[in-house]
Image 1 (tube, rainbow, N blue to C red):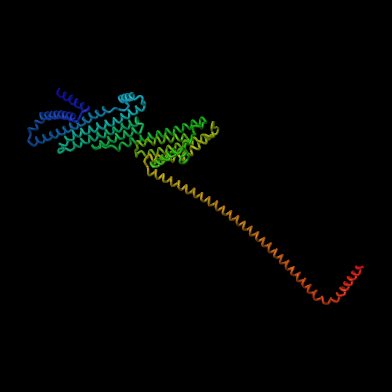
Image 2 (cartoon, helix red, strand yellow):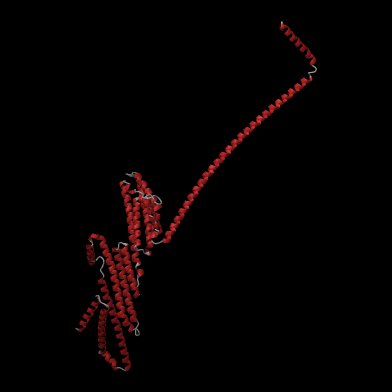
Length: 534
């Protein structure tokens, strides 16, 4: 009857350990259990001392009796060590029940009741958001409860059992090693259970990065707290949170891509191109098409964005609403990284972005091939025009902008600055090349004009030279003719002079001959007078 009562008392004490007990209460319970173990050990010792074999051993010589008593002593120590180990196992199992009973499982009836109460208290604020917040609060509360209870159990175990084994360390060190090994195995099992439960809850009930960040902070604090007892498990948190972060971002990206594909398909099937066209609200480079104040504000915003290394949004995409909505979804996914940025997720995010760009290109190319199909009804010309324009804008404008935004969102400032410098350098090279081409073109035009002018001047000089040569030839001809005339005149004059000279030399000889006619003339003149007087 007493032994049955002892067993009931042991079960009652162990059951008490399954409840919320403080350190003094826990110490009282363990002390009582040790007393029960002491009673059992004393009973076993008395039963051995009263057995016939023990009586026979005492009647032997002193050597044999001492050896048997020493062996009995070692047996009692082994039994005591086994009882103490069993007490530690019972203690940890009972405290396990206390941990499991105090944590509300997400999705259970109790959790549903809590979520229902929370949603009913905030019906006007939106049921889905309140339910999500309630589940997030349950996750955070579960992490905090798990942390406090695990740390409390470890502290209680070390305070109760480490001191007892330290006193017997001189006789046997294996028991201390067993104690710490047992605590280490229990702690590793509880941490593994916690991580499994946390991973399942995060995958099922966490849908925004704010809650993910809160859960990560709580779990990191839990891990650092366990580090004070040599059980820091912070490196084990990354495989739980990083894939979930990537998944939440990729979900938003895929939603944007699916929305763009559905819009293109609906417009293509209906033969309507209106929803694919929009109004561009800014002019090309700086977008200063508003009034003075607005343009100044845009300029200030642009300066602020440039100073914060955030790429300016390409407003010309507003002329293509499907691409603009796709970009908004992409930027929405990147904005989630502002709340929870985990460096270990960078490779997966970059890989997902590359896959998104490839899928978007394939979708735009498939849309362009589809609208080029003969027999397309509706606004076939505009559909083909916008399909080609969308593909071109995605390659030349949207894809580089997405890459730059991703690097800025991931905190790769050096990469972004290098990219900006490279872009600025390329722009400067393009400007210099354009100026060079323009200068070369102007120089070629000037050279052409100069060549034409020189050719014209040469032609004019040649014409003037020819005219001067003609004039000189004419002058020479006139001079020659004048000289010939002068020579002819001189020759005639000379001939005339010679004739005169010849006449003068022959005049003396002809004087007598001429006197008679002279007299005759005088005679005739007198005769005329004579007849005239008549």
